[in-house]
Image (cartoon, rainbow, N blue to C red; front, side, top):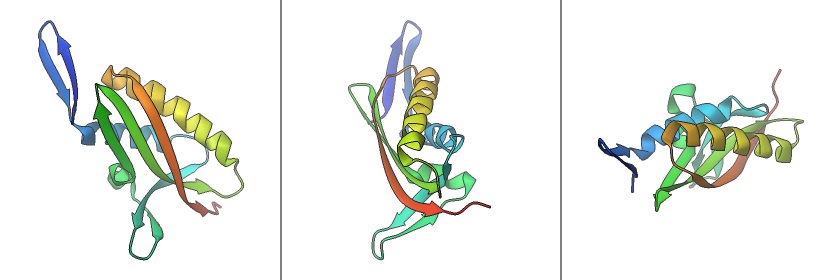
Length: 118
């Protein structure tokens, strides 16, 4: 289901893919996030996605015009995962709510890999 807003000028529908791209862009700006990950279910490996494929590491669901976001991320080695997650949640929640005009009900973070960054 897509996000829908009713205004005095008519209805506005936002595709989940648009929200996913925006949320993915906001997430990779966060300290400690190397990027989004695509998980190969067959062999269990996580692949770091290129910047143009960020939405593949983000799943969006909308129920009762409340957004739930699932992130599959790669984090930088040596950072506190809880600090990265807290930063990501607050940053993405603020930006997605401002962008879409809809509340973010839940953000789930799945750390798929850790990378050493030079």
